Amino acid sequence: MTSDAVRRVQSGSPWEESFGFARAVAAGDRVLVAGTSSFKGRVLYGEGDPYEQAKVAFAAALDAIAEFGLGPESVIRTRMYLSHLRDVDEAGRAHKELFDSVRPVSTLLVVEGFVDPRILVEVELEAFRG
Image (tube, rainbow, N blue to C red; front, top):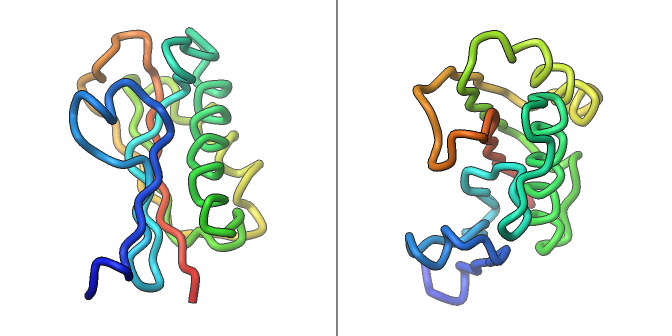
């Protein structure tokens, strides 16, 4: 694959710069979106609310694929990472609102924690642009 076939998008997250990663990478017919939380700049949206954090995080991930001309209908895989088992239903509700008509494959994991302890939800997307 030539370097012309790979395109990267940054979102401005402070972690992208300090850790050296892109928010989204398009390679061939796939667009992958890195772990995305409900932070916008240095502000966490939906603090204490897993439903709101999931909605904001998915919206940010969808903004990243929009850079490649894609929308929710192009999403083929989602991953949701939660810091608490109690938040499964609320994160799932946000996912259903966005992707019920699309029905991507999805994985939900409960993890020990995130870079910032106020983060309850982090999401990833994979989209197809074939």
